[in-house]
Length: 100
Image (cartoon, rainbow, N blue to C red):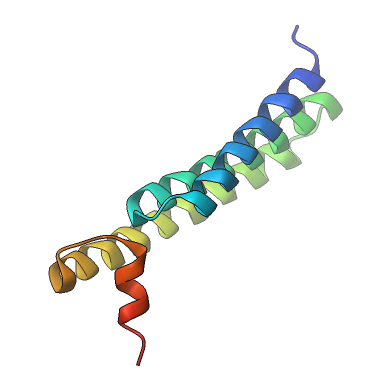
C-alpha cells in the first residue's frame, strides 16, 4: 500500500501547479482548468486523509466538492461564451474593459 505522504505530496504539487496556472494564464478557459486542478488536489487530500483514518467523512466531502466544481464549470463556461460573443476573445484583459 502506498503511504499517505505520497498522496499528500502529489496533492501539494497539483495545487501548486493550479495556483501558478491561475496567476500566470490570461485565457479564461485555462484559468478554469487551473481551478479544477486545485479542486482535484483538495479532493485527493480529503480522500487520502479519509483512507488514512478509515472514515468516510473525507470521501463525502470530496463528493460535495465535485458537485460544487461541476456548478463552477457550468457558470464559468457560460460567462466565457458570453464574453466571446461580445468581444471575440476569452482574454482576461477584455474583462477589464467591461468595467463601467
